[in-house]
Image (cartoon, rainbow, N blue to C red):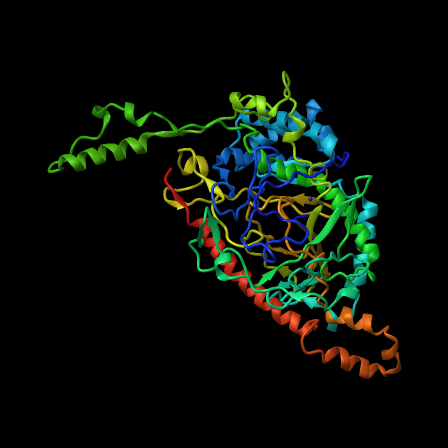
Length: 590
């Protein structure tokens, strides 16, 4: 469901703040847990907007979208699932056929103007696709590509991941509560950063080469105070209108560090949590290549978060229009006043009658034009005398964060179905991280007929869905809730699966504690390392195993790690419930 050109690497913008987030000065370590960088006018450095922000500067939301625009987006998503759509859209015979299908499709409210816009926008996006191999399909932006990951790379990934899959059943890690349908291969909830337990090196960076040797070294990271688990506005700490504070002082997923080589390719320089860097060196190399393929899509997804004024104006809408206009219906056309009916009742009856007579005039698509801006903003975004966007306005992760590098959390999982378990029930709506504020701004007036929302109802709209086919790369921002939809075996007599590689990109404008700071915590990794110590080689295998298994404190055994994971999952579950409530809590009147 998820995962995510190249040019010379340049220096990264510096923070202008009383404190800075460096390789060792990190939130939850030497900085307050709730620390965020300040931003300056030059260079303009700030966190990307997300659904977890503390205030108007940090939170992100989408404007209300009309039902007709959602229809347009869904049609474009369907068409761009067709083979060679980017060529066929320029074939007049085929594009005319598609238009007729749009206009005649059952359940679709599509006008001629909408069909014309869809065709022209697809032509526009086909040109973008020719340069990027990807297409933005939903506002936000949700981006997909079926050609970003070549078949040879997919096959290499399949082969190397097979080593993680083909292990004795007793060692397989099925996700708790999944009825043994979700197999975790690499999961960040195992052996996470645990405040008050995990060890951290405060003055040394851990590399792939020496991470195993550093197991057990370092100081225990202290538990952050409760006051640091709240948002800070100005000098005041504040909670989030929920039962749980917005920052966890219990756990944190650990990202790996990714740097860029001179040729611009990605290089993982600290271990992926729960993926042994020596045993799976080839898989590390494949994941690096996947990151390279994801970055252009991430650039596209992040662009609206940086420049949200630059957008398509598909369905202009200012206020609802009706035919006939209730205000212009003559009162003499209304039903006569009933005997004994008081004035107030009669006036209310007339208004109800007028409302029943009116017909909503649906807003229609405009004449197509590329993403546009308010006139006063154009000099800030476009090169003089052109519609070409200035380079500094674009998002280019390798250019903007080339020297700083990226932090990425890696997850590999399979959903495995069999004749005796032929159906997956689907996941819950959630965003990644903790605490959700508003996702939807209500800046226009309308009605359920325009937006699919009722007065004083939840301020959430369902954007759409994306088909997850083999080899597809999808990226989306953390301003959107998402879920895996239910699915079942196509042939109930044969086993089937859905395999996922997921990358979670940490906001590159802030650095958090990573595997460059925390040595591996897996007791099994440590046991394999000390087995090579000369003095221990004289002991029997049974005695060696006893030594490893009877370590009281650290590192951590798998059974204990799974218990800790249950605590982390319970914390995240309660957050997901709170997030869902807070997503739906904002009400609006149309």
